[in-house]
Length: 374
Image (cartoon, rainbow, N blue to C red; front, side, top):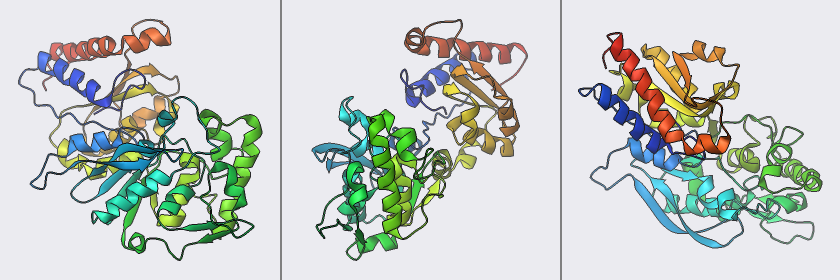
């Protein structure tokens, strides 16, 4: 159950390769393949892979017409499960939808709010939000506007704030917010701890990768500061407030959402302990495994739980950082870099499938040679 190897193969593809290798070396071995993610793009697919269809034809993707980051209508989906709905910020508000031309000044989370409303209309009163992959810096104000929140500027005019005009908010009116929100549990999958504003906040850290120029950053940052001021709440120091262009703060303020580690939410939802209780070995991985992986990434999230169950964990990765010794204290048994020799990034990405297969096969052959059994 590995994360995707970004830029090369998906979590599902890596799971198929590993299952094939294990069956080759241990034909009688039972394997369970679980697609995983940590709260970004692919979170819906990860959840869907872990839940079988039930009598109500769930889980499945619910498609509809929702707003993209520039208010254009597109067809996209959220996940519908028996007990909860799962909405990816990236499905309606991602950089991918900007076709390589980030416009963080004008980007909105309005489509995410439309998806939340659709889930509420279906009767869901537990909604999980995957915050990764956004193209926005609107602190979730677009989302809130779609749910009935009113924003006014200095002239008393109503408007839907985007990154460039958060600074113009003089009033946030919650009186007409969808009343069903108060009846609903919201959980946000968030794997960064950045504050809302400041040099380590949403604008300065993530704005440039969303198309912001250096001259835009003070405006975006001041807008986030103004949003906090108009909210009347202390939002900046909430861990993860700066996630997804301030959406972490937004879902906390507008939806009273709990911000949690993405992999922890997924492992809870799929009942990881029950699935793993009879396992002899867990293989996981991601594209790059380094010191940052200790902060809530897929392999470490899995290993911490596997450690409590006494199950060894092997990590396979495209590249391995130097400072990973602390990962062994988190329950990881061994880490293997699948790249066999120095090569360019482009070559490594092209050879990911072959390299993953070869490395996994080498490990299985070694286990078999020393008399191990799976």
